[in-house]
Image 1: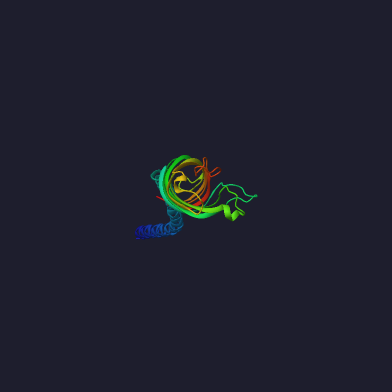
Image 2 (image 1 turned 30 degrees about the vertical axis):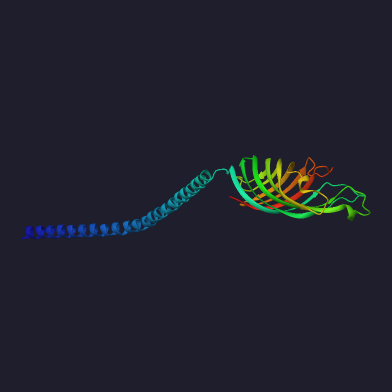
Length: 259
């Protein structure tokens, strides 16, 4: 009986020890689970931070690509628009023309207002050549030799219409990349063929030479398709047969458009 009591006590003690060990293991497991959870919570912001940095890198790459594409397009535009070496145009303008005439008591003959219409072709780069054709209507007072009592007695008016062929060699003092806008300086010569004339001077129409040569100086301004030219015409020979100092002098201004 005593032996049975001892065995019963040992069994109860073993059962209690196993129960206590199981409870301790469960508590330890719950504690470990509780400790691990904050670790997962902390790692999540780190992953978010890493993810948020990715768009910044993409944005930088996109910006670089856009800049490269823009530069490429600009290069293609310049390559597709070469220097404009050849051009043509038309113009109209006004002129003041006089014959050198005869000085009378320090009084020189005065020029009168005329007009011109013309066209041209031009080719080259900074150094260029230009050829044109021009209808030139001029009017000038003229002093004739004589023994009149006053200047009025020996002066008159000559109106002449010419077909002129001007040729220039010039340089562009300043110009745009394609040469469309420029400041030009040119010298040249022209042949002037008389078409018709009238006068109030004792001069026969046949005495006005049918053809003369003149020197030219031109200062021009190109502003895109618009041009402005200042031209000086200097006659080398007498324009009227038998009249000394009858070389033509003219100053003109033209306004035109280029093609």
